[in-house]
Length: 429
Ligand code: EPU
Image 1: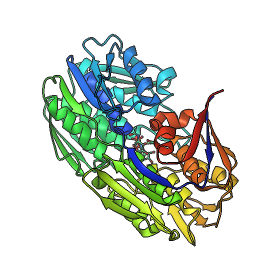
Image 2: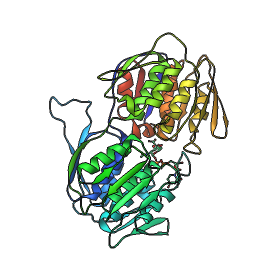
Image 3: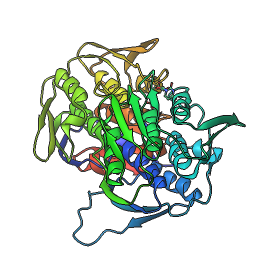
Image 4: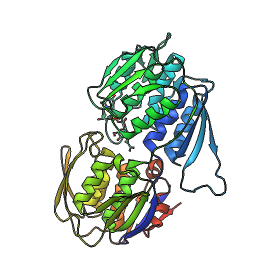
């Protein structure tokens, strides 16, 4: 199993190219199930989760072709996938696959919308909390699907097709909104989604669905209206930049000090996080190439932050901010309001010398003057990368174990940080 070895204490200077967003790529790939034609996705990041979803879709009969790079192509521009769900051979998504990646549960929506049936394993709990799918099931039921739960599987049936309806989410859910959008695209009549998630990845999926012939308006607001159409066709779409990768590297630079351009990053995708970085003392400047982030000399100021659905501070940057605040000059408070148990990084940051107290959903972080390297590991993607951020500022050597968590969501992490001067290497056993 690979490990990442980091020797802390170097400033970051240079340019980091930002990849396409993992959390847009996954639903976009799943949306390919809605049409017999080929969906072409550009700017797809090279990530373990993308490979895994390719296998899951393959099980339904979907062909995925990865286009090769040509001489002169930008090496940072991501890959192009040609995805064809011409014939769906199986409408079951088995436990062995769905349990490896929760987002694969979302196949339930296009399968029932196009094929009239789907049998998809319930994803179960995961390292960041219980993560139920009740609201996704409610959304499908509102569109006329008959739902049964049997042997750990959700069976959704709509023999005569789905019909438009009103879906009112009692709680903002990204997966629920993706599911509702995909199902409603092929339903008869109009669907209204109230209290929809406003995350930029929802807007990206809606844009792609509209290119495929869907009639969706209001994506990016809390009220989305979908006029169902009888069929969708192929399209070509470029995945939007990854705002969580952007925020992660921005926090790494705030942590080490230095001066970095996050190339292709779009500030409006993570304004709340950039505002917080500004409060810590980092300088954040949007440029025509991306985002310029710098911190020179001055110490880090503490902050009080609560995670929230977009446009609030994202839960997917909570661990990284906590790593940063371990070195602040004073006491910070971070409240996790989206997931009930997303604090696995706390114990591991403590191994590096961080002082963090947990009280319910709030962490109190007392900044310390120095961290010291140690072997660490984490059981989820964002927690793992928070350890990388801490390690970049820790004295001596840190080994981050279980690197496969990082590979799920960060493309060429050691190359991107190493290119800016970090002492970081991957060790393969
Ligand atoms: N929830 C329910 N019932 C449901 C669905 C959700 O109670 O049926 C609750 C969840 O338990 C949670 C809250 O609603 O408390 C929000 O969950 P949401 O459905 O928004 O999360 P998700 O769609 O499962 C996506 C991202 C996560 C990200 C969250 C929140 C993808 C593939 N995953 O998950 O990303 O944390 O939205 O923004 O888009 C990550 O990339 O590391 C990651 C975990």
